[in-house]
Length: 343
Image 1 (cartoon, rainbow, N blue to C red):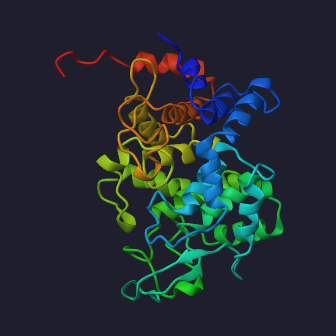
Image 2: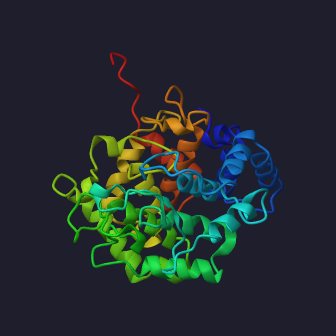
């Protein structure tokens, strides 16, 4: 069988780039890494995405779950490893900085209908289901020590409660709150806050991060009975899907696996076992659901195994085992059985 590492390196340049960094642990200075990064930055799909975000923040989109939301695309650029100084990124950073609330988080255009407690008009505001992703992107772009970014992060982190992060919005949005009890944590807000804090030494091992991770793991353990803000962890949650947009298995695993002190947690390993069981005999993964907004990308189809999904899966498993990806491949293969010929 052909090793998935070789197969990943044959893929799109962003797959090759992140594979070399995240699975092979090659340094940014390595010739192969630099070549993959240069090819990534010159790729038409990536250039088109950067050009689109140059007009940040773009049009108002009602649903935070929409995969076409600019802040989801921004976070994807950050996940790839783009940074300040790359073509077009400084312009995006500057435009984001033009709209920072007095509270600290950066704002995006929002429209909350009157019957949901909003004004029904386009408003510059922030919510805990968007602001953490904007801050995450800025941190990943290299601005973690920028005073404006530090202020945004501090305010968002300070909203943590005893059970994670709530459904919270800026004062411009008035009484708006999602469909849940006000004392419940919002699973998605908690997830993306943890993604943000995982990038910051001052917060990664702090009390808020530990409370947040416990919140998500306890929801998994009690997933049949608890569905705060109508976030379920059932069949749809378990479908493999990238890029990271909403509250699903791959996104939760990717975020929780960033915290080394969770590696031995049985609940996290239970989630990882589901992932392992979805691999084919070559250790590759196929999408079980796709975001139509990303249909032009390699991970916008379900007909063939996806390299970007496979990379994301192996990265999770590598983090949890804290061993090289080649060793993980051996363990994955050992768990697999040939498909039933009658199926």
